[in-house]
Image (cartoon, rainbow, N blue to C red; front, top):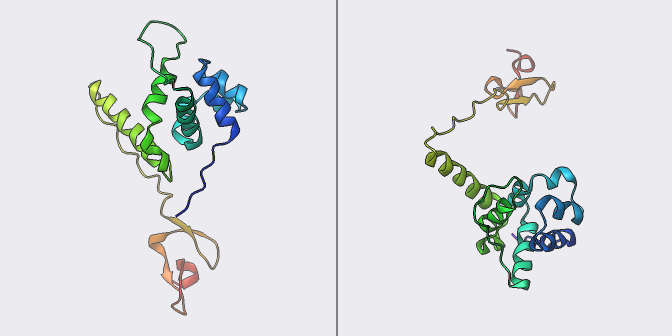
Length: 165
């Protein structure tokens, strides 16, 4: 499956500003991202292959790689930006078709952090009950998949009312 991978100009500009040392929020807003998107740099980096690739290309072009600063007590430091870039902009991601490998890596990191902190594993999300609902093709009524019956001509499934049950 051929995938067209182009890095837009605003991603290149954002990568340039980030490597210049600006905060992630300021770099993204100056590059043309909305302020709501810019506030969630980690999520944007996990979901945008183009931004990860732009940062990789800019680092290679400059031969300057972001390194997280030593840990220090400061209210607004740029350590998380460099850590996210180091953890998520890896060369194996270049040929990826989707963002699933990066999302899986992030999920595994969160699980490992919970284990290291001695916290219990998160509970699995309970099903809401709406996952098994579908519309009856005959009348359009919302009905559970488990309560569908064959229609009179035996060619499809319909709700019990349309099937005459």
